Length: 130
Image (cartoon, rainbow, N blue to C red; front, side):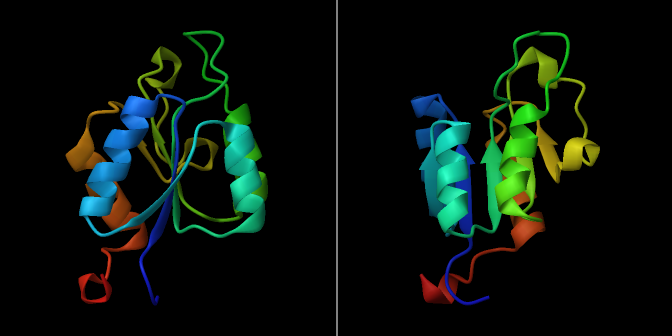
């Protein structure tokens, strides 16, 4: 693939979003952000990304995971891999493969794990093109 690998980070917490952007850009990825599922759906309706990293949205019950936000993303993203990176208690029992998730990172500050998942799912960026 020519150019940088494009990652969409969907997270309402600006501090976590900024951390992800910084680290992913340092690794050579192009990063787009959305603070809500609605904004992410709008972006995905008009452009393509290689990977989506999202927080668990709409989790009203801390003991029951609600995958509704995943279906909204999946409807416009096709087969783009989705990584759930969440501190939500309801996401604790979610595993990769469930709900169509490519990977799950349980701690928003598991940066090394997040970078590893990104490179496994979409490959390492072509640093010669940076």
